[in-house]
Length: 321
Image (cartoon, rainbow, N blue to C red; front, side, top):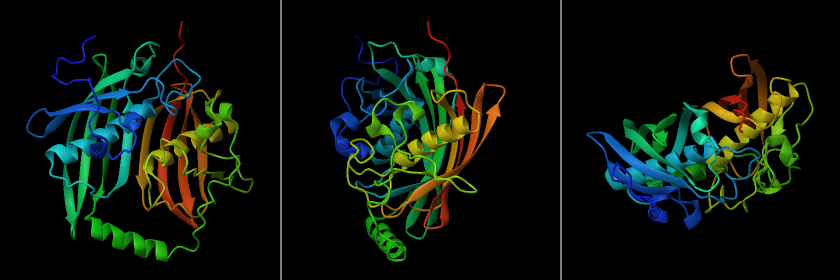
């Protein structure tokens, strides 16, 4: 066993929970970080073998979204360790896009956890009053192979500013029913490539001129709600986009099986998703003749307004022996 890599990073232990903004030890995916060059950073990431969400799958491949979450955490850690971001600084993710460069790098070896090295850069995109716009770009290597490239950006707020903004936003909402998302009847786990019904985050499509796929908001979920939030967390929204895309693509005949990999994603968030009030997706799917998969365009709605847009690319997993 070699817990230290050629980069000098170690997989011996995770960073402190507070640095990754997580409560449970098993929800921290960042093992180590280091500065790399003038404006770059390195991070060692590891996904637990028995993670209740990311290892709930029907194929012998690791879930690329698990590494997206690991990179998201790594950028939070980098901000605190190297970019002078104060502890407890609230942040709002506004844009996220990624492409899987080599899906074969995600093949599950069965007896080892998924480990990788992230090379990242981050900085300011501008200032807005006393808030700061930030951007980041990262490349993930698994076993020396570039597996995924990710870019994103958002806004960081002083704690008082964030509290004032959120109080003003929530005061103007037409309802505050925290059971709205939890009351949705979930779709069958196999319909979204899952075994465990607890990890199903969308319900059966609601019929209409434009069918809507409701999001399930279960604040008891141990990964999405690892700690309290005053809004629906981004990882749950991304997972909702993935599952809604699968449901829509299969229903449209654009995808042959719900067991499919997310190979690309581009998401823009234009508003906070509130815990109170039904959230649903509309989706348009087309077959991708180059991959045998599908491309799905999604809009996310709450309170009669669009709060996010997402484009997801789905592809079959390569055959395994």
